[in-house]
Length: 167
Image 1 (cartoon, rainbow, N blue to C red):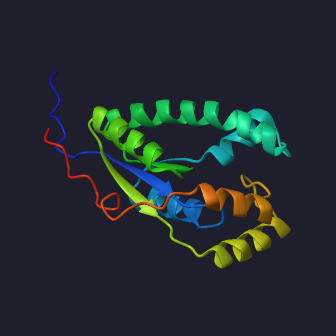
Image 2: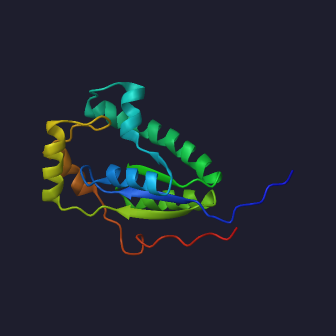
């Protein structure tokens, strides 16, 4: 039996921003509205590695979790399912890499940038740190300051959605 091919191009949403910007909140909204598969490393890490990890341990386990989540994402995109990657995507190089990966599996990519001031990020993190919800980690002001110096905001050309691919 031959099934009809779908003309719909799946979309990979890249959540871009620093901790406390609201990436996971937006990712959850996209997950329910699209619907889409949402992959958030901070939710998998405690299940796989336990709670209360040091920053060094978190840094060491993030890459394998993100690698595993990309494998799941690629399979889902290949099946025509939209995917939201809630990774942060702090560098242009990382965003370019994932846009190329999306294209390679027949998907388009959309950069979702949460442009939040440093003062607002500090306030969000202070409130969050006071009562950490599940799937979140403590972020100090010093860490936020350091990470802010590493962050490369997306350029205007990155914020334009990739056009749908021909199928």
